[in-house]
Image (cartoon, rainbow over all chains, first blue to last red; front, side):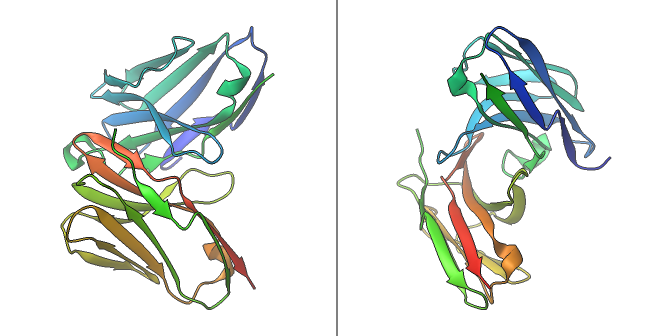
Length: 114
Length: 109
């Protein structure tokens, strides 16, 4: 595997389900990000982990819970979601020393909440 | 917060034509970047700009960091069908990366 991978690519879940999104980066980076992409809106930054510590939480509802067990893996745990949470969830990584600009994205997980 | 105004929102052009899109802001950004997103995929970094006035090319793509540090443009020369997609500008402000809403490019072959 190369680059940034995300699983699953598609997920349909009910509002009472619990599921997790997984991201893995094979670039040797030490910062990882979760973004939400909704139709016709700019990418919304959700969480940032730098050197495995959460450094940013952009007022994201508690029904989204991130986990970064090491610098290569990032999870987003989901529970009791709402239909408006349906979106493309993108993971990205970067090298801290290079700044936040050069981020490399995974293909995303298309989430549908029914 | 800092916002980027990206224009146009969408373009429908003839194959072979040159394309231009831009991003403006009322805030000063330290870095400007351009990404492209194909359907069903994540954004891919095309060009990164680090200094005011910098002009950088990547194949048929050329981007410039405005001298005021409040704008950037991306040009695509001699467009081809595989250029279709959504192009995003992004700027770094402190430790944040802010994205524009995107320009949807459709090419008529």
